[in-house]
Image 1: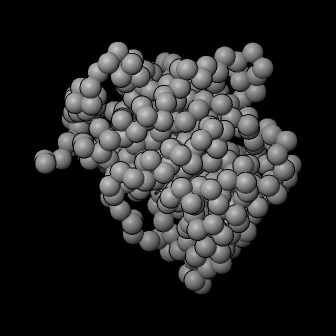
Image 2: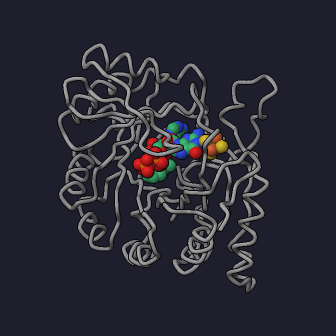
Length: 337
Ligand SMILES: Nc1nc2c(ncn2[C@@H]2O[C@H](COP(=O)(O)OP(=O)(O)OP(=O)(O)O)[C@@H](O)[C@H]2O)c(=O)[nH]1
Ligand SMILES: C[S@@+](CC[C@H](N)C(=O)[O-])C[C@H]1O[C@@H](n2cnc3c(N)ncnc32)[C@H](O)[C@@H]1O
Ligand code: SF4
Ligand code: SF4
């Protein structure tokens, strides 16, 4: 089989699947409470893709080159029966299944996820300081519960666990060193993410971004670092290791050093739209297609046609004066991060 490439020569390798648009947190950079309050209309259950439909799309995507899926959201652990979905995805030959979660429910779910066959988990955690954590995540869940969840995941064998930290100037600057220190000499890898202009509700401004170079030098000044080579083509995080052998960290520089050139990711929203870029304004409706009776070959063909004309490179164009307009973009909680 010849590899399917998009119009810029990029293969399709990863499928990120949002299981729900709901969340038990209201992170200010993702689902600000003033936009996602009690009146917000979340998707009704019948609009969510069923597990059978998710599996059908995954099988079609695998025939086109996908080898890894990441279950995300919203908060994926809020979707009932997630263990059953993982078991059925893991029965597909050679598929790696990972999950990104806010960790609040990991303590109770870690063992079941491991039994279902989940390969790895990434936990989002923006600070270990209780007040800063609350300010970033706008939740009553105590930070200790997330830290315990990370430990449960490690004990259950869902590792090596990664911790994703969104860094926002003026809010959690101090968390860079705190989190580096907390997880040094542990099996957990912390990855610092430049704050991005996803969606249309977080009122992003460039001066709120702490760039990769500053993050690296802040850590390097206290715990000297050296760069590591990527583990695979298209890895989003730049890796560094502590010179004293204390483990490694990653930095995801999607604003200051975009990685669109080897972006191999498609995204499936909770209601079955396929997006070829995190910053897209609209997707292609696979749910409607499947519910109108389309067979597997038609689903595969739709994906193939969509990927073969793909030209997306939003992050590379963001800073150019002739770059993309700041029109409506899909929300991260709906499409998955
Ligand atoms: N702009 C942009 N940002 C991305 C993309 N993929 C991931 N990110 C950002 O990077 C963060 C980390 O993504 P992960 O899924 O944890 O990273 P990953 O490197 O794919 O995961 P691994 O399988 O562990 O290597 C996300 O939460 C996003 O903020 C992408 O395609 N475009
Ligand atoms: C949308 S969340 C979904 C999964 C789960 N609820 C969680 O938080 O891990 C996926 C990832 O997107 C990241 N994210 C959300 N908004 C972001 C933004 N504006 N800039 C950078 N990363 C963001 C989060 O930190 C998280 O790691
Ligand atoms: S980043 Fe994750 S935990 Fe935070 S609001 Fe978005 S979906 Fe929820
Ligand atoms: S901005 Fe779009 S094309 Fe670029 S890396 Fe992110 S998802 Fe891929």
